[in-house]
Image (cartoon, rainbow, N blue to C red; front, top):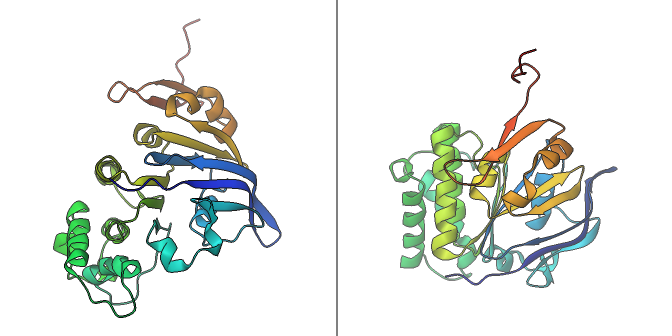
Length: 270
């Protein structure tokens, strides 16, 4: 089991240029759990995660890892604890899958250290877990979108961090691969105690796989708690601006949101 590091956000304000995206946000990530961050487009989900991984400096407030500001930690020290899969990662031209996944081991190597058996094992495990072993000798830029996404997840897994942040990890994936990736992240959490924080668009997948659901609306925290506590018809209306019916998923027991479109609501006979 891994050490459960604390990751908290205190009074965080973020923005780009003269535009404020996140304002005065407080949030505690539950150690050793899977947290899913959801919200409408442009609500600040990805911006929040960029700051949590120190890619974006705050205008005000702090992101704290074990009580220390992440923006003041040495980069390599942070990378040994916190892994990140950004929304649109870019691989160097011509790099192979094995080479890219191997780069996930860089935070664990010193200036004069050599590639070790532990590095080999971490890469092999990551390739196996993401079903990318057969791709290891292929250039990344020749892969399909779904294949590339699985390779990037393998790179993050090879880093073997106690905290893993993923921005829309199911992007480009069909339904079967979405479920495979989310099952994989859940296995990682259950087996190793890895704290997983992921931005997701699909509310129902977020509710099924997240222990903790965070709903962002207009750059502020609307709700946080278990899926049963947070995914309600009222919260869907407030965060996404749509009417819905929330029922219990018969397969998982978690909330299942059914959007109510104007043309698909059954009305009682007159």
